[in-house]
Length: 596
Image (cartoon, rainbow, N blue to C red; front, side, top):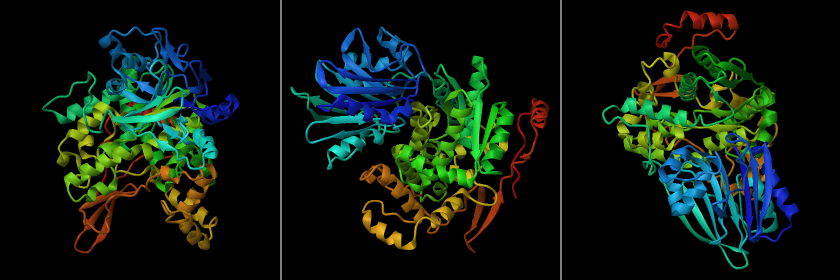
């Protein structure tokens, strides 16, 4: 995780640049550089580094002696940088993955460059010889990038909105915009170094296969084996790090699969440390119990973060500042992620975390997929959610990890894996028999990677899984907000905000905090995240909510809950856990989940 900042066409003094660039210092706590370009005096590039790879030689702005007219700042990881070196015969000056961007650009231009990258990235490349500036962002927008272009020819770009707010103060009519995922923008610098927009190019569409060389082999007649091969390959790519790695583990299917694969590969590589896992929740939450079971099964060094409602509520303002959003579902889950990352930073030496985000979009895991009108409708909805994931779940993991100088990687959003999964027959991907992500679950059935009841644990939203047995996290927030906002304020503020009108006191509470930090930038959240289909207007045989699987009786329209039990005493001692693992070493599966 790093932070990039740039400005072109500005005559503002360096001190002002420093102030703006330093607003994202949290993204890169290891080193900072702010550099002007001698050929272009009105340009300045800023970089905050989190040193993950090639600690000694990875400082930016990056230049190489073979191509001194190219300046690069980027945030992300290029997983195929060594393959590109061999394929094209590049002579690297460093061991940094991002150097591949410079050599690719010289080889074939910016569009060629973007198509060849297997990874997650946001970059700003300056070509002083041709007076060009390029802004590019990966397919899913895993790495953030925002920009401002004024009528006077000033272009500024930054990893986060907060680093551009000074530009808004200078030019009242300026709107910060997000660089679109999967696109490269091209800008020209004139003789006085003012900036003008030239074009935007979409180098990849979600679901299209990679144009670069891939090495994980798909088996034509075995879909489930192909899913296993590609997901494991995705996790293996993301082990590219010189810092300690761990996992965010909720105990749900997605994070548990990623954790199990990382543990498997870590043992294969004989890493000199035990994988650390981290779960969070209110006391007695479903996620804490399920994650404990997974950690015990896999033998990780497990950390449980138990928070109180007051502790979480007091973090909301900081969460919104870092998240740069006022979307209620995103904020609810982000509070837990924020507290988890805070704990990791303060109590461990883990710097890189793997997480399960993206599976619900790729593999149709959300509850509303149970009531999709057709397989084709479900497929379209899946692709729409993938397209906008950078606004919601991906933003949640990026901003909260960056707030504490950590990096979270998301293997389910791997280019190769996601394009293969999305290419499958829509009928295969949709829920069957009330089981969401059924194909993904069956792909790992009988592998022994996870306990059976974890492999088949129903979907719970992150905010729901953190809830205590007696009171949900959402109820805690809403009870708090009720005392903060008077009924009369709802009508007043509903008229004040023409875009994304607050629909509840909770929604209004978040919006007011957002506007305090980022006034006039509400357009950056184009819509509130909501399920596309509602059970209120469509009968379904089965769907899931809050860890309970419900059967819908279409005749009498009643719901019958069937809880999937997790048999693990939350007070179990460490020695009992060790004895349990030893006892079950030859029989890794815990048996089927209990159902009515």
